[in-house]
View (cartoon, rainbow, N blue to C red):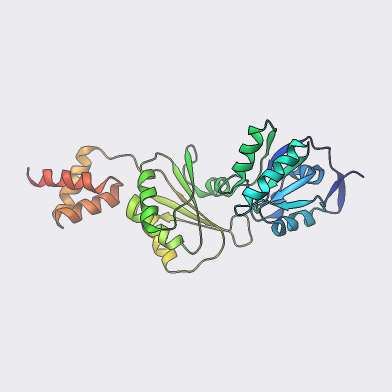
Length: 290
């Protein structure tokens, strides 16, 4: 009996799926965002490897898909991975899905794909929804060049170190973050990148309570320090401003030193320009001695 799937009460027969591993993007919030190709492949394959079978079951029920599912996630990858490879070597077709979005983006799916390729097994992408790109195109920030940094470290020292490594990258930076750490992450972003970088906090993309908050890092830090939030979060930070001409920086430092000590002037200039505080402090000392 041929496999099938259903869209708005209309039944469709699924095509035969060739053996291999299929990396399938699933909706990040709105079930209507799944592609026809993904539905067809989910219905026609031999097995679906899921981050959480309970989450994937909601998608499958919505479209009348009855393909067998198994778990494949961070905590069982070492045990489940070899079994999936064995099935692939036996000529099975397997679709890998995450709970939401595109697999391999901040999940252990890359291990399975890498192992499959090492065995000469075909791996195909089934593109679709992905939270970083969805947030980027709606953010209003430059999209020509961007860097996805996954989740920032949970500890402050490690988080600030990572941000120091990325602060001068000439691209829009994109991070996932836990709602419980958004406020702390924004404080560190202000401390390392400066308070005037344009940024966006995107929450619950494509869901009922979708929200995009835009402003400078300083404005967003103050906003999210004062409120508790829920849901999946994407933080985007615009690229650093082009460095001001040397004479403009000299002028800025001179004006600041008329009102405050050298160290504070350097710190203020660093926040305003995004330039390293240490370099500005050295320049300020030189200006004072002229």
